[in-house]
Image 1 (tube, rainbow, N blue to C red):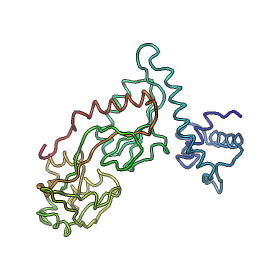
Image 2 (image 1 turned 90 degrees about the vertical axis):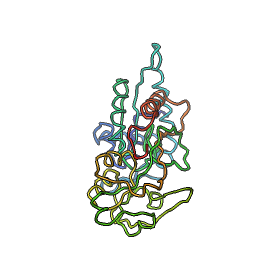
Image 3 (image 1 turned 120 degrees about the vertical axis):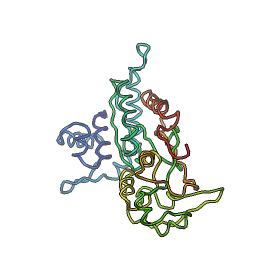
Image 4 (image 1 turned 30 degrees about the vertical axis):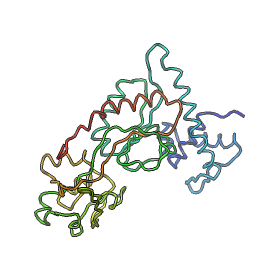
Length: 307
């Protein structure tokens, strides 16, 4: 029995995106071609991979088990095929597709020009860039590499630290004039806070001073899932915000925001490149991680109070 790589790739793309329409857009194919590839693949393996009902499709248990095994196999096959073109003339000519996942605000502010420069250096390489503040499952969603902000925790991913940032507690001058300036972490309980959906308040508002730790109670009046949105709400005087330094720095410099509790340190925010374990490491992946490290490894390109 022979299996076609395009059918496997199409099946995995439908699994990742959840619909034939989205898979067709990703693969630049018609929906009918995507549907036929999936049907042909089902016929080849002799198993139903999706349940179809009123225009909706849901994966079967067989599809879930198969996808788990096929993703790394397809990735290895693609890497092996792409490697045939590398170093054939004494230089490295990167080819194929590199899929990158990164948080939205940091990506738009700092990664976009770095990625654009990398693309210009490697004109034969195709790039797919997805900006989303959620931590994507790289292997399941088909990404070669991701950029993460904050502690990684327990993970099977390979990682390389790019630079270090830190969180900054801040508020607009108008808010502080109206509500007063907190002098101690316990004062935060009477203030309005702007929360970040992807991190708990207890994790965000961790403060230390002279070896003593504080996890103050905060009243999350507003909640958003993007750092730039938090900044905009804080600058509008709606409440206190614990912002990453790369976002807070320009607003602190131009006076839209002021740092609060400057004698207390918030938790560090490492910025890290991560990727699923693969051996050997594909040249396109190694080159991109090296490029990120080269551009960010000498220190963050933004200045914070106390730097």
